[in-house]
Amino acid sequence: MHQWVLCLILEIFLQLCSGTRVQVVPGSKLELPCFTFPTYLSGEPISWKFNGEDIVSLESVTTNASHISISPVNAANQGEYVCSVMDPDQNVEMRRTYSVKLETLNSHTVLVGEGANARLPCNFISAHDVKGNALWFKEGNKFTLLTSAGNTSSEDGRASLLYPMDQDQAMTLSGVTAEDQGLYHCDSPDGLKLSTVRLVVKSALPPPPHSCQGLTAPWEGCEGDHGRSGRVMGSVFRESLTEFSFKLYSVFGDHNAQNNLLYSPISISGALAHLLLGARNKTRAALEGALSLPPMFHCVHSEMKRLREQLSTSLRMASQIYFNTQFNLSESFLKQSAEFYDSEPVKLREDGEENVRMINSWVADKTNNKITQLVKFVSEHTQLMLLNAVSFSGMWTIKFDEKPSKGHFTKLNGDMISVPVLRHDEFLGSTAYVPELKAQVMNFELSGNNSLYILLPRTHKATDLQQVESRLTDAAVRQMIDQVRGAAPQRVQVTLPQIKLNVEQDMSVMMKKLGLVSLFEGANLCGLYAEEPLVLDEAKHKAFLALTEDGVEAAAVTSLGYSRSFLSFSALRPFVLLLWSDTAQVPLFIGRVTEP
Image (cartoon, rainbow, N blue to C red; front, top):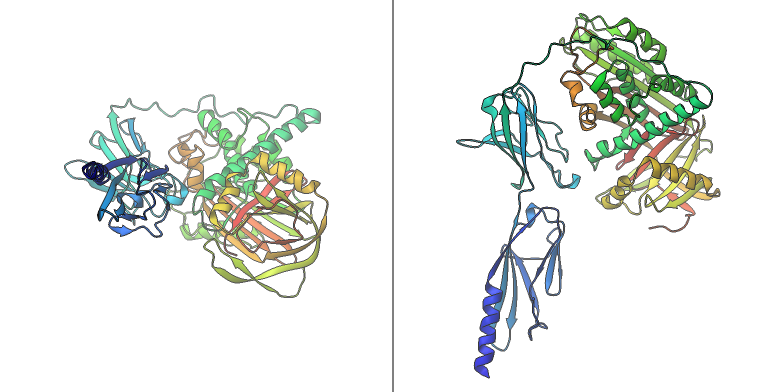
C-alpha cells in the first residue's frame, strides 16, 4: 500500500515538474491550470510564480483557485509560470511549469515593380498597445535598422512609417530597386515580433506618358436639382456626410486615444469635395469612396453649396486654393470653384515667409481670429495647397449661472483636477440613457437651430469611454437624437466644465487611411491642371471649440450603467460631444474631452 502511494506521488511529481511549452497569439486569452486531474492535495494552498517572482498584481493576469487566466496576452506575459503545492504528509513540493512564448502575428509577401513605392504591413493588436513606434529591420548579412524609437524614417528618407504612433505601423519604401528585395521584420518596442514581410521586386515597364486627353471637361451638371429629385439628392448627400463624419472618428480616435479630440467633418468634407471637383477616373472614385458618396454622384458640389447657404446663419465656411506660380489652373476649374465654393484660387508668392503670412491671415479672417496660425512654413517647391475654414457661434437658449464656480474633473487615470464649471440647478432639458451607445446623453439647445449633445460614459475609465466611441455610427447617432428628443423635458441639475479645445489633426494620415495615398504620389487631377501629374503637398486640420457662459464658439480649418433619466447631469469626467445642425441634420463638430 505504501509502495503504491509512493509510486502515485512520483507519477504526480513527474507530471507536475515536467515543463509545457505554450505558443500563443498576442491578444488572445490563455488559461494555465495547475491540476488537470483529481488529487487529494486539492485542498492545499497553491502558489504561482512568474519568472521566479510571486504573482501578486501582474497586469492582465488573474489567479483563480487552481489556475490562472491571462487576457489579453501581450509581450510582457512571455516567460516561465510555475505552479507549486506542498504535500504535508510526504514533505514533497510538486510543481508544474509552463513556458509561454508569443507567436509572430503575420507573414506577408509583397510584390512590387522597380521604381514604385512598396507598403510593408505591420499592426499592433489594438490601439491600447501603442506605447511607441515599431522598429523595422531589413535582414541581410546583419540586421539593418530602418526605423527606431526616436526616428520614424531611414537615414536616406526612403523608408518611413506611414502612421507614427498609430495602431497601423506600416512602412513605406519609396523608389524600390532590385537591391531592396529581401526579408523585413517589424518588432514592437519591447521586442515582440509583429510582422515579417518578404519583398519581391520585379522589373517594371516604363510608365505611360502623362495624358489628360478627354479628362479636362468641367464637372457634369446635377440633373433633377429641384423638386422631389432635389430632395432625394439632398438626403443622399446628408447621409453620406454623416457616415463620413463618424468614419473620421474611428481614424482620429485611434490616434492619441487618451487625449482631447476635436474636428469638423463639415470643414474636412468641404476641402475634399473641392479637390474632387478636379479629380478624374481612379482618383475621383477614391475620393468619392472616402467621402462615402455613391459612385459618380454628380450633385456633390451643388449640395455642398446648398448646405453652406443653409447653415450660413450660424456657420461660416470658406475654401481657398493656393498653387505654384508656374501653374495655370484650368479655366473650368476656376469657374466652378467660384460657382460652388466662392473661391478664387491664389498664386503663391516667391517669398516663403510672405506665403505663411498670407495664408495665416486668411485663416484668421475666416475663423473670426479663433485660429490665427495654421502653417509655419511653405516650401518653394509646393505645388498645391487646399484650405477650408469653418467657424461657428451659438448661444445657449437657456442661460447658465453667471457666478464663477469650480468643480473637480476626474481624468481617465483617476486623477482629479479643479476646473471652472457651468452650473444650472433647474435646467429644463431632455436626457436619456441610450443603451446602444452605453451612455447617458443630454441635449443642450443653441441659437440658430443647433444642438450640443454630450455623451457621458458610465464611469471615468478609459474602457467605458472606448466602449461609447466604438459604437459611434451614423445610424446609432440618428437613433440617439430621436430618442433624446422624444424624451419629455424635465428639471435637471446640470454641471458642465468650461472648456477651450484647440486641436490640430494630421490630415495626411487621415487621407491615407481613407485610401487616398495616391494624392501624395501623383493623382489624376486633370480637371484642375492638365499639363503634368500633381502632388498634394500638405493637408492639415485645426479646430477650436469653447463652452462658455454665453454659449458655444467653434472654429476649424482644414488644409487638406444607467437605466433611468437622472435628475442631475454632471459632465465632470471624460465625455464625447457632438455639435449638430437641426436644420441640415448633419454634424458640425465632433470631439472627445479627456482633460478640459
